[in-house]
Image 1: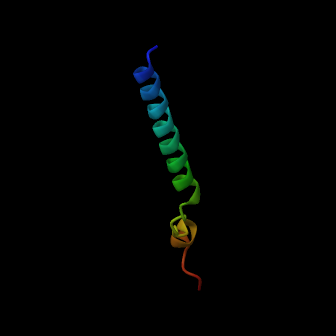
Image 2 (image 1 turned 135 degrees about the vertical axis):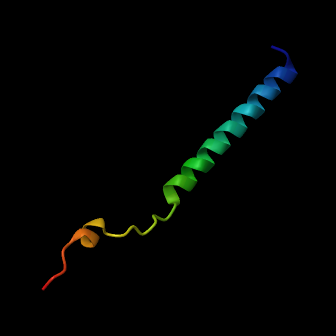
Image 3 (image 1 turned 60 degrees about the vertical axis):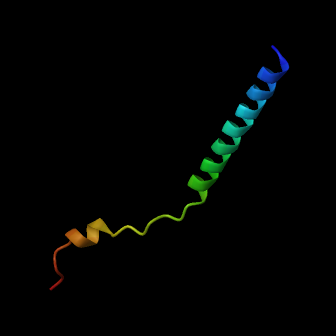
Length: 47
């Protein structure tokens, strides 16, 4: 393997690893959306 191929391989692996870590971080730190309580919407009116 020549030098330019090795440098290209290392750079691409670093970019892919950095993007993977970045997207995992974004997914793990996102705030959950408030979801409506589906059970309370289906309850009958209290009398």
